[in-house]
Image 1 (spheres, rainbow, N blue to C red):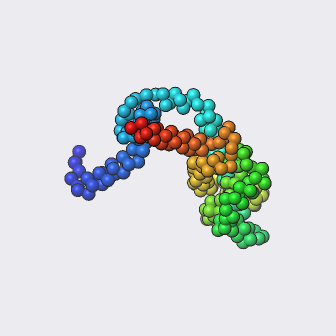
Image 2: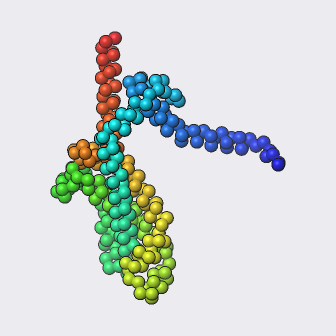
Image 3: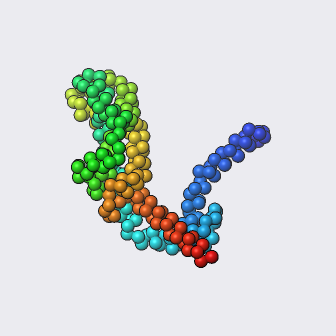
Length: 249
């Protein structure tokens, strides 16, 4: 077996890739170390690679917290339902807009594009949700995120690259528009649908804003909102402890 000759570039390349890989992994190590350390001791900071006071009480506290399980259930439901509805409706809209013979095609494209340029602001948006009776309901997470103009454009661009001969041959076989869409378009659109599903799924999973400002019922807040509240409570507790320590000193 021949040995590879020494290469300065190869050494530099491996060093850079090793550092890059460590930079990607370290945030997970950092969080793991804090999760395995005593909570009060963690407030002192200076934890990097190993716990200072090892404990599993944090995990026991999490698994015994009913609010966290409820919040995870809401997050999973909104992610699954929201992603399915978003991809379905955006794909139907993109399929319609990909047809050059669609009556009013330019008008509909401009109509859904216009709200991406102008925004009425937070208060009118809140009032709109209130008039639609979405405030303090599960559907405030799903319905406002059903459409996204950029996702429609991405799907439409992909669909326009599908040869029209496939649809013509399907029509000869007796398929209508819905049959062509379900049997021809959707199976061929797997890559772009997976991409859009990833985009909107991550958006649903990471969204904490909706639960913080549009929902006051603690039973239907998502896990990201709950974690945000817990983080703010922890920061307030840490600040009060520091002030008490300074006054006592």
